[in-house]
Image (cartoon, rainbow, N blue to C red; front, side, top):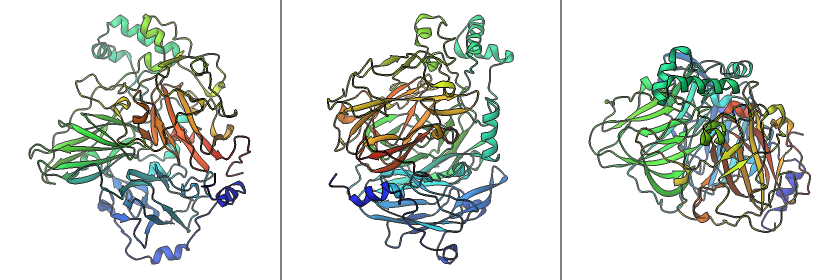
Length: 621
């Protein structure tokens, strides 16, 4: 650890890191800063300015509430420099970023630089890495820029992210960009509700499926039979099995288009955000899913896309027709218009309850036809982890979900250890041929977990519920391969299992059956190579985000080519494995990026320590 300044360890161990970075000036200074974009009304959405945070003078961001018309209704939003999304922030790799954040709200706020490798005191998570930015004060973020690619930024305070507190961040490479393109556009996808987000959370907590208006009824039995190819009797049997489990096969998203308006660059589908491109131009679309909850299935209608970057990391190009972008993920794609016809940029909500859309074409005054939304998908018994049911045609697993069964990977690898234990032996863990599925043992996760079935299995080639049956090629994790092998691809020497758990009836979410308030820190030893086996015991997708460090996703390929991500989507009943180099001392957030899941407990603090025998105190203790 000679390469780590001992003062970093000292300041952290004494918990003097809270508030470092400083409050540069008072709010009066914020009022006097010239040249700040002050967009208003219509211009406040989708036309935000571009700011260079690595310029010598840095940039200023002003956080305040404004009334903005969304879907022809005035709404109170939390804006950054007057708009939603906030301004596009650019940086240059190898330089230093300087960002002054002025809080004009009547509540504390923060900004987290999603996917950026920054000192933990600059990570922007209240209660973990700093205190937050108090009303009427300014916080100065200053950090070296150590990477390039497409990222984003957002609040980590309360439910502010749902109210518009987000924006895109692009880091230009210090050297030549391996991606060739003629023109680029930022695509920020998000979801908006006119309902107070705390009311939304209360309704989710008090009534399961409150916003799900797509449930099966007697009136749509025939429709379900036609859509699934089942007989009337088979449909009734399927519904009976779901009823026995007290589950709903249409429970794809906790919040739906019943209250959500789906936005592209801050604009509703009726407002049609537009981009200009000429035939033959290589257009780079930098796509960010800044939603609080919504997964999108994105395509440029009628055109192939070449995916060139995932989560800011260059990958070997993959041609596809459609991709599912989980909450907090980013993808860069290249498209080329073959003629002067406009094309629709179509982002369909995963549960098919609505969509965001825009147009790309040779002029701004034209638009393309909007595709019809596909029929909403329904979960299957395989999504519940009931492989026995799927393979043998019976429903013997259907009754096993109530405080079902849990297990771990210890049978598959004798070097498995829990996160609370000591480091394992120095023997390398395997980097290929990992188990494709696991069976669960006795449940030990308590009332915070309702488990669906006995099997968890890898789904690297599964595009997700509702995709892959209409002839379109769909991107999957199994297709992602990093363009260049990262410097540290050692095999890990320690691993632990992490169960993603939830109780839909009580709307409790957590890891290993515990909420953040009930759980201890997870400790990584500085410099170690560590493996986490994520095991989804729920019927929901969970986009899991690790702050401060990369996750190398086991994608069934050559270990050197496994993709590097900051957010990984874990599908229902999925077993997903990531390897991590613990190279960032400090305390870091690790959580589901569905905002309401995180707030209801699916969050842990990671402590990167010099020794696993050391004690690590909570940041707010």
